[in-house]
Length: 508
Ligand code: XMP
Image 1 (tube, rainbow, N blue to C red):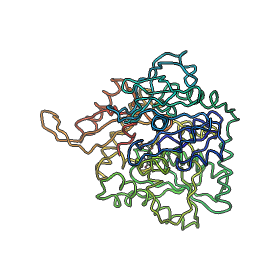
Image 2 (cartoon, helix red, strand yellow):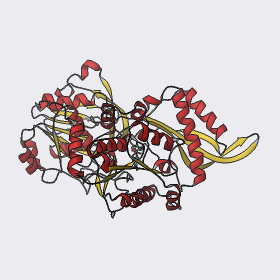
Image 3 (cartoon, protein in one colour):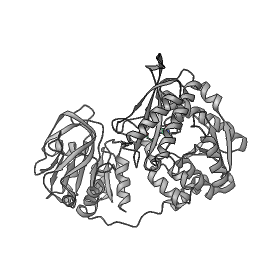
Image 4 (spheres, rainbow, N blue to C red):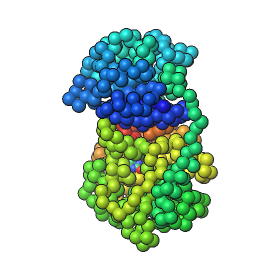
């Protein structure tokens, strides 16, 4: 097995998932007392994750130096590379230029970590997210790669098998990132790939243990995660499961009917539809802060579920939470909170449920795979991701019926045109944002002070990083033309061309 020391990166768990893809086990540990944990676990390799701290800041997180004398191969990623630089005789300094998202990495010298890369080419696209940088590599190491802003972007001490890379090999946007991990885990550490884990069987075993012969309710949002969670739970506990779908009024046009049709007629799940439109709007009145919005939404959901569950005597709530929801809502000791996903940190502390989350350790693409293996309708597996708080987080400012209505009509046009262009299936999600900005327009020679709608279309695989889709100009033109003519209130349309990081996918 491989030990991953977690310095609080948003993608630490993704490293473990990539290692799981290689058929190898890993364990995530904290930097505090890492030496003792490593002695006990006796791993074949150690990975130092990224993290938000600075090695010379007040909140610097380091590890015991003895770890590097254990003769276990080490790979430092991003902050992990800086830890190696700082602790093994190199030098770290604040960077002059920040690098977030895509950058070009040039391989300067080959080494075991990059074995096989030279066959591809010499320059690679990698993803970064950092500020500090190593200016002198550790004693005994040589520089093996650099980027335009970072001369020491990778170093290697082949004798001691200690490697540092500034970029994130675990995110799928890094070219050949999985090959770097493969080289480290299999070739350098000498791990043996085991057979893949039987995920579905493991999830069912877990559900049986957690629920037993009790009654449970499942919160269905219409998305793939809660649907898979409900479907597997239904297979395990049958009639003891009741699914709730709440129409919050913040769904897209036609969505509620689609969801009811899929669950009732195709997946044959026991479904209760609850009209929560008035309650959500009332609770969101005057709420502007996005974190507050999510908390209000999380609380409203749970109060509705409590009320309905009481009627049938259920005390267990099944949620389709996946790992990126957990990590963004601060799932580990040293990671920063990015946003409180409504079903994780958005939940009130006091509620009457035992919460069971069978997919908590999985990523979206793994959930989609489980759905395909479980013979879910194709349109459901391919459906774009939609956040639980719905259009509330795609609408900046206070949520009102009027703004929701404008946004819904604009959003429908975005999806229709992307489907017409045959691009829907290649995209992680596409949507309109009600920006809350008023802007000047001119219609029929008249000045019109109207709304600004932003359009976002992104691709991603595991939620942790994403790139904006290069939609053809003609498609963008059609979307813009239709929005400004069909949605009377809108006078201007812009396209969001930001990657994640630094932007998140949703605007709030
Ligand atoms: P961000 O905006 O954090 O989004 O880059 C990552 C993915 O998560 C979805 N998302 C949410 N899903 N509750 C959810 O169920 C939430 O509060 C929430 N916030 C974001 C988002 O749609 C994207 O697919």
